[in-house]
Image (cartoon, rainbow, N blue to C red; front, side, top):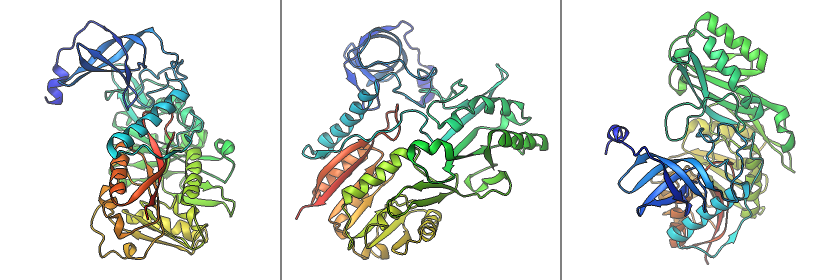
Length: 460
């Protein structure tokens, strides 16, 4: 059935009374209607609820919560007033420890059913502050003619509408408090109908302890505009930047059109810092580069990876999907050498520059497509004792299926998708590796995202 046909489909108007049997992997309540699976957004296991249909399909129905008739002990009052509507956070109605339990169960289920693995040490769940943590975001913008108003924020659940919000408790405070002022700013622009999004990227001015990070943040916003901005609109952007201490970039087309606007003389590079007992590290990046959204979890994640790799002075380490050198640089402080490989030549260049700026001479970086054949690639022939693997959501099945050509003794796998991770874990098992440790990292609190880290060792 096409999307248009589904939208035209007539849905039952009457509410259903349902008993929630369990939670789905993405955090929705699961019930049954005449034997058919029904997913209920906002419901928890054990609850009796009323809900209305939002979609009907051949294999399952989708509904949204109307009223909780019998509440679960795991239900709490959401800290955000628009949590029931906004798609930025899906689990604010669930107690925090229950969120972690759900994410752990998702990981364990995938490993059991896909990889057939149940015997491993469970790493303690990695957690941090559940509010004001997010440093990277793409905020949708829309002028609403009927309201003569502008909306700025995350899209609503299960549709393309933008949530009517004035602040955000998920974004770092320096950004979350600007939602309402941004709405007023864009509404005042002559070109307000031609602005579809604002991309936020936050860096740091200096290296401080994690609990002091909010005091040293540097905020950039990239305004995408479909038509040229007038001189008057440009002046309003300058005034806003000066008032709220942010920096503007403008984007008139694709990613290659991003240009600094204001302040004109500031450095285009942002930085974040990694405290290190052997000397703090500084990672430079451009606002459009991929960086981890949660600074606290990122710092803890790097430390855990170092511990799981158990680095020795004579280790040669391979860091695949190395990006800016987020793992590469800390690892290089603790072993003989680290080779970083990344698909983007621009990111490889920035990683190499980061290593140079941090006075690291035992790193090498290569640009390569890690999803294709690497028989003749120089980096694949150098020999490594240990491997750090941090692939995208699609995983790294093409690479792990040929892991014997690299043959590291230890692999630490950092995953943002438990399904593809479990698939890759099954392949690593076939290739002669044993899963020794696995655990979740709550990189995105209040969401269904399950990030994890695992350790494999080669079976002798």
